[in-house]
Length: 473
Image 1: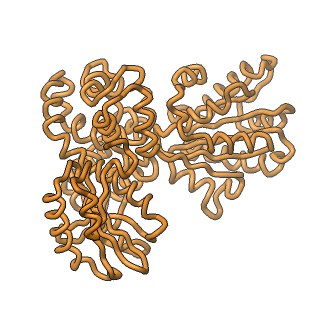
Image 2: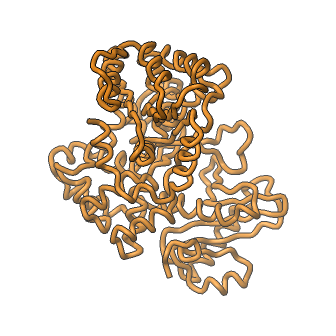
Image 3: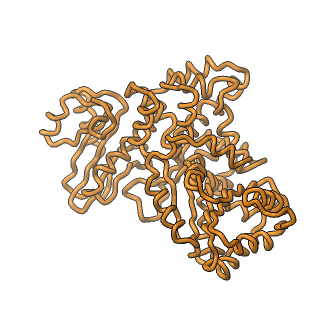
C-alpha cells in the first residue's frame, strides 16, 4: 500500500535537475552488489527519487515507522516480501536475523530500500550491526542493491561516517540531495503555468527549493501568491494546513511544543541562544539538544557565523532558517493559531500581504547572495554575510588574497540615486570589518537597478535579477 500511494504522488516536476543522481544509481545497479546512502532534509525528494529509479525494476521498499516495534516491522516487511516476490506463504522472516538471511540469500538481482533507516537506532539498534555482519560476510556474493535513505543527517553520520560507526565505509556512495536552486525552481514554475516573473519570484520566496510543495501548486492550480495561500494554507481543508505540526510531531512526539516555540522564536528574529531561550522561557543551557535536533534531524535551521569568522571558534554565530516555508509557517500560522483554528483566515491573509515585502526580504537576500556567490566563485575564496555585536551588517563580503568586495542587497527596484545612497552607507561600514584585504570594492544588488552600466563604469559592482539569470528585464 505504501508503495502504490507514493508512486501516485510522483510527477515530472520532481525530477528536474536529478539526472546525475539517477545516472549514479543506474551505474551502481549495473555493478551490484552495491550499497548506496541517500540523505537530505525532509521534503527534498529522496523517496520520490528512489521510487522513480525503482520503476520497472524488481524492488522492495521498506518504510521504517518510528511508532512500530521491531517485531511489528519484521512482520510487515515479511508480508510485503512474500507479496512482492510471489513467495510461498510458509516462508517466515519474523526476526531480523531470518529477514536479513533471506535477503542476502536471494538468487536474483534485487533492489532493497530502507526509507528512514536511521530510525533503527531507536527502534532496534542491533538491526544495524546485524546488517553490517551480513554485508561483510555475504554482501559481495549477493545480488543486492541496498539503498538506505534518511532525513536525519546527524544520525546518518553516526551510522555511516564516523570512525567506529557500525556501517563505516560500507556504502559505495553517500548521495546528499540538496534543495533545488532558484533558477531551477523558477523554470519549474514557468513550466507549471506561472507566467508573471513577480509571481514566480513570490512563490519561490514562499516555498524555497523544497520541490515537494511545487507538486501542490500544480495539483491545485496555483499561479500566484494569493492562490497559493488561499488553496494550500488559508482554508480549513487546505493540504498544507498542518505541515509544520505533522513534521515536528512525527519526529519529536510529546516534546513537539518546545520545538514549535524555538522555531517561532527564530522566525521572529531571535537568532542567538540567549534570545531564543528568553523567548521560549527556558534556561539557555537547556537549548543545545533542541537546536541540534532542528539542525541535524530536520535540517530546517542552521548555525551561521560571519564570513570573516569561518574556520575558527566564534561566539558570533546565529541560528537561522534554511527552509523558506517553515519560516513562513512559524511566523504566520503557528504564531496565529487561535485565529487559524477559528477560521479567521481573512485577518491572517491581510497581515501576510501587508508584511510580505519586508518578510520575504530575508529569503530574497538569501537567494541573491547564493547567486552572487556562484558568480564570484572563481575569483573569491569565501563569500557570505558579515555582522558584529553592535548590530552592523553587510549582506555580502567576498574575500580573496587579492582584494575584497562588499555588496548590499535590496528587495526592490533601485533608482540611480538610491543606489548611490546605499553605496555611501556601505562605505561607512567597511572600516568596521577587521582584516580586509585591499583594494575593497563596493556594490549593490536589487530587483532592478537604473543606469547600472553607468555605475559599473564608475567602478561599482552592480547586479539585478536579470544579470543573475532570473528572467527579469
